[in-house]
Image (cartoon, rainbow, N blue to C red; front, side, top):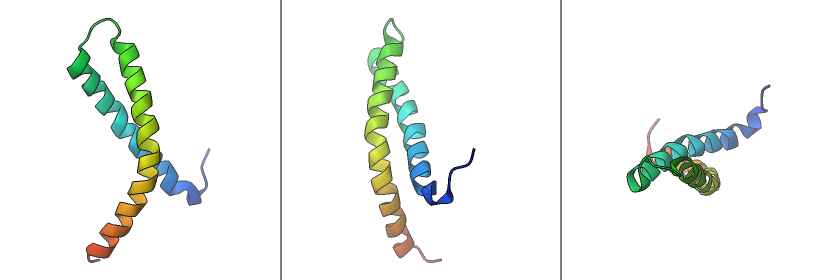
Length: 75
């Protein structure tokens, strides 16, 4: 199944947000909580919250940053 190319930016932002927030959640829970009972639940909660925050932010800021970079970097 392919998604229409007009949704490329949204799909890219969402995948970027998830691929960044989940590993960050893993290491933050590991550093602050450690591998003990309840780690998996804490990691899943942290991943869900991180993803819920990062997906909308990525969809706002990635296109904005791309426009800024295109203005200041010569082709």
